Length: 129
Image 1 (cartoon, rainbow, N blue to C red):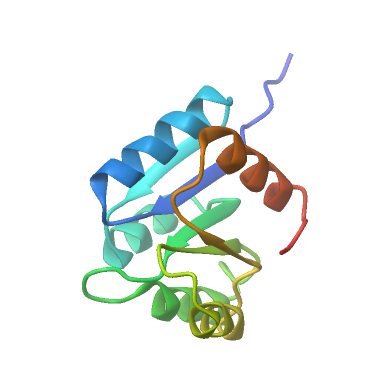
Image 2 (image 1 turned 180 degrees about the horizontal axis):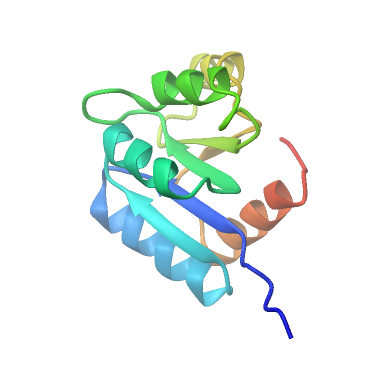
């Protein structure tokens, strides 16, 4: 009997406490999760396995999350990845910028584990905010 491959969530987050919190929360919900602390680390992980969903922090050291999203959307191999922008700044300018580069959603952190899991499952099901 073949086993179903779990959907992969890539969390691109430079704050290790937030990355650990999200990873544990989503793995507890049965999801396959990888983390990357920078855009460059995310690119390396994506080259090995294309994720089904990326939770992308907008503010990252070096290349920011918006630039990485723009690059992913320009590449036919990665253009279909659903990217959800994640930021601590609840300001319309950040949401507009995220949507302009192709993000399907915009989430303000932090979120409780139950909210986080519900949001990720909704985005995996194709729901956008």
